[in-house]
Amino acid sequence: MIELKTPFEFIEALIETIEKTRKRKKLRQQDLCELADLSIATYQKFLYQKKISLTSLVQILYALDMMSNLEGLIAYDEIQSLDDIRGTAKKSPLPQRIRK
Image 1 (cartoon, rainbow, N blue to C red):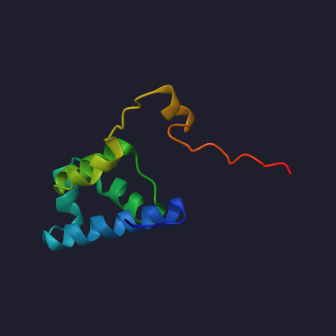
Image 2 (image 1 turned 120 degrees about the vertical axis):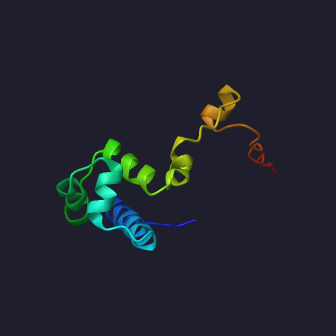
């Protein structure tokens, strides 16, 4: 698992992954934008200003066949009990003090 410290570092890593994938598939930025139905300005704003809508990001990932990268974001862990919500399930009790 990649451990990133800031949102900026996460976005930088995401851009790097997208760009490597685009180049590996031998696509120009314009080609990717056509596949993703985005303007080149939107894509370059993402690359240089680190700003993009979630919809546009999903379109890019879909165009590059990278949708499996999003599965971790949409995975849902069901909560089984109220103890799970509280985080108290199966905690051992604190040791008792012994008086002398």
